[in-house]
Image (tube, rainbow over all chains, first blue to last red; front, side, top):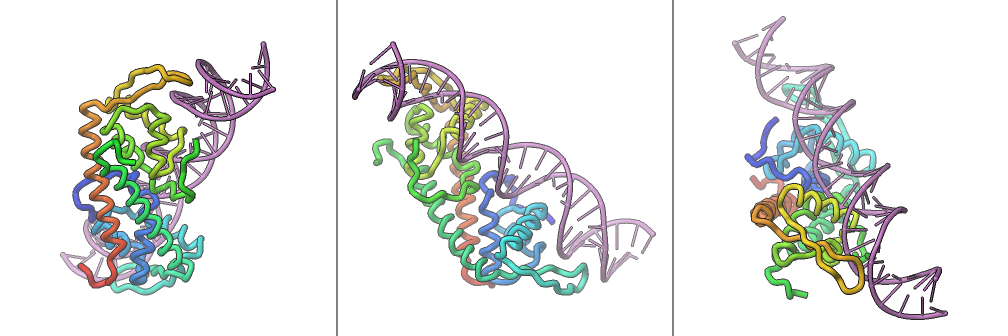
Length: 116
Length: 116
DNA sequence: ACACAGTATCTTGCATCACAAGATACCTAC
DNA sequence: GTAGGTATCTTGTGATGCAAGATACTGTGT
């Protein structure tokens, strides 16, 4: 798969963020790994070598459960579904991200030294 | 030093972001390391074990130059000043961050599955 | 003189997480 | 059977933030 939109994009920026992205997509609908890569790559480049370990981590932590489902042309798909704990985590991490991004923006957009 | 505002804050979120934060503060005025920690910690918790390696990296990459200056009560301060390359880097990374944050927000704020 | 706190710089070892590259396997079409 | 698209997973590497500590200068209190 290869669905990036040109730029290499700073890898470091993604640290920790891809987890909340996955949780957020799963909050809308159950997905299988390959599908998640395609879905998220519309906005942020992500590779399969990233998604599978991430999904296994989320399962180990009890934030998702899985079920297998046949597919037309290919091996069976492993779907991931958010648990209650996963929904709570999605909400908390989203809040955290929003606050973090706001803090960074406040730092970057300050045009004068005198400010506070 | 200890200037955080309560929360532990997701460490992973900071990866790569602290660099643009440092560049951004230096774009306003020359600073020494200890001062940068205090300045940035108003918004985002950062430790000294992070700032010094980061500043050395920026110097190795030619984005900053340094000069020593006596201080009233304590050892001399090493001030960091942005180079032309540093200003360019500051601008580019800021653009990159803004676009990245916008992409993440777009993913997180999508309320319906049907969207695109 | 001595100890201690505040200021200031720097280093070492550790943890986390994304990625590239590749292995595996299923199915369809040629 | 060979190639390509679908799909999952693993291994090793790299980047970078942190805790903890070492170093050193200055001023204050005893």
